[in-house]
Length: 171
Image (cartoon, rainbow, N blue to C red; front, side):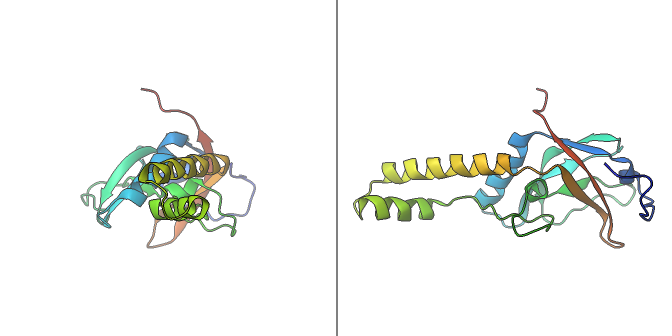
């Protein structure tokens, strides 16, 4: 992914060895959905890279309860990636952001009422919501990016760009 002849400053961090991040596209979609559905604003669903870091590194689903905390002797720490890291943003390159938002029941209710009047049943609202979720999931899968930015030291802003590959996790 990275061009070794490029004039990039060298980064002194074990994560700089990562050439490819492998992630299950279902995990990206599920993390998005769970972040939307999560009632505890301090709990976030992320995709985590766990040391030791290798050239090909798998990102696994992980639930982050509050600020990331690891024991001081854990070095390097695992890296947490927001699911939006893997999804193209039509507004430009803004890592950890995407233009795709999870459709809400309120939006489905509004669409059902627009199409069928105020008497639209809850079953119809459910149907509209399911259809909207299926379309959103299709758009997320079609917007998966080929490269992701990995921040591994927020104090120094050290980061790398690396290839992203999508394949189902082995059971």
